[in-house]
Length: 402
Image (cartoon, rainbow, N blue to C red; front, side):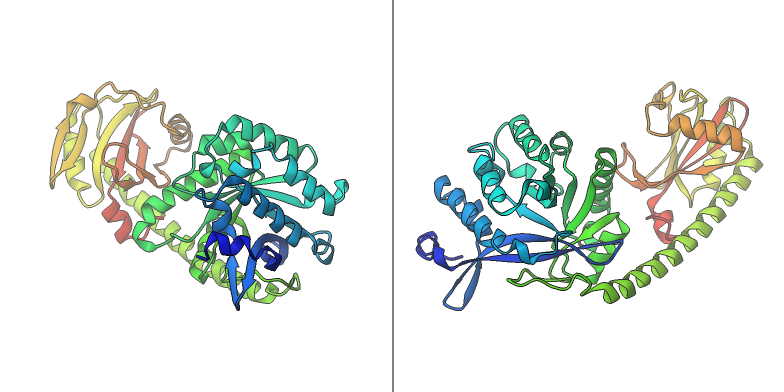
């Protein structure tokens, strides 16, 4: 990184750069994110590190953000009026005057009627002040039509803080995506996606470097995409349709692959449900005969790691029959526990009672074991319901673990 003094003595060499952001639906450029680069001695230095370096006095960093804003917004007339402008800002610097100086600079280049094009980008987890004060400052921006994006959403984020800020866009960083951390990663993305849905925000996946990451973003509800795989920051602008044909081709490949996977998974789940229903109907377990439940566990040894019976209100009527170190054991302590608090429990009970068929849940992580699982559940009489927790080994082997 260039020395801070060297940066400060070359401020006349700051240039605005623009990185395109693409949409999943139209496959076109729908926005540019601005940044500042210092050009000196043939090098291009991204000034993001300077702005975020807390060892540098705040007044220098605030001044730098302002110079970047001036340099980048000076060319805004060259951008089509339907294209949005993403403006990253260090929230700790922004709050030194509650965003007033930033807003004043923006208004120098953009008429009030066009402020809905502006997307102010902040990093929630980097903010060290009172989150409520940041919320109020951002609300002031939104009263003029400015949209808010929270960037670097991931493992370090506080989802309750993000919900309070009520952003229009959540920027998910794809830098750390890898197969080794698939389950934890999937859990995190699922939580972020659920939050986005509840607060009405769009997902933007940033720092996309590979086609795999683009597919991951597409598959996980990303409406907007950004990163070097698509386009690097540059001093010039691109045709908004520059990647339209490439996007169409890659998207078709994603669709074909996903449909094939979903079809195969549907058939596997259908086959599994039919197999489990047949075994359960043959054994006919009830809560007053635990030996039948133990016998059923032996028959389901390749499928399951835990079985139990509940009533329609969620109270457990039997011990857990739990596989521990390859052996099935009874766990009486589970009797009389109530599971109606679990998401979708009562909804599943109603569905089973009316459909008269077994149900297989979506994937989730078991609270007790930490294992990724699905649960097969079925009505065994008018008031009792069997629950069979399926082992991850079985799900993985039969490709029904996603």
